[in-house]
Image: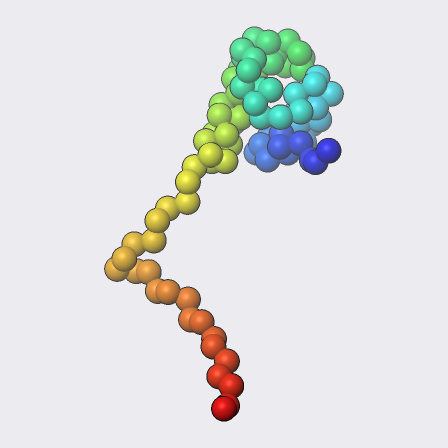
Length: 87
């Protein structure tokens, strides 16, 4: 099994450890809970639970965001090296 995506959250390591110990192994598992549930499960106040929930939403949004399309005016196609054989 791969590393938990909870490590992608920009939170203190202690909070990430507490999330892992409480069974929150993925960002989705955080987003499936309410702020009070998160707070109660890891033993923090609801304000910290809200911060965790909002950070999980932010990271989830970043993970699902499509990369921007290149702008025609600023796009420079990559150079391609072609080897030429002598005949």
